[in-house]
Image (cartoon, rainbow, N blue to C red; front, side, top):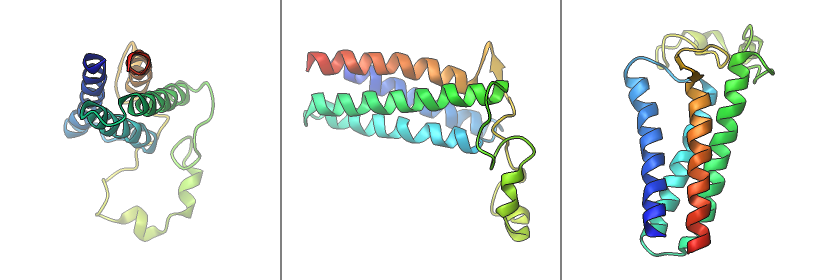
Length: 151
């Protein structure tokens, strides 16, 4: 059980670390990319708590839910990128959702120099980054469920 928890926790660390490495390489994240990071962080925290011996089954279940959440967001995001369904109006299409931002917000130098649209594909190797996140996170959810069953 501890091996499975360590494996899954390491998987989330790898995926979250990879997201930050892509960002450092110049691939700025969109809003939906950021949304996918939070459940990875929750799974990492849950995994570390489980590895410390505190309610490991409960932590594994919570981590599985986090993995399923980021997987669902990843698959949804991949569908938005492919044009299969609409995404949030604030970061897709013609950017109509941006009309709520003030001119100062749009011109602020405190943020990145461009607004990254959620329906733009910036990197793809078979699947987009969001699609790969969906797949790998779904695999990690299975590992978490296996760990919970053995706890």
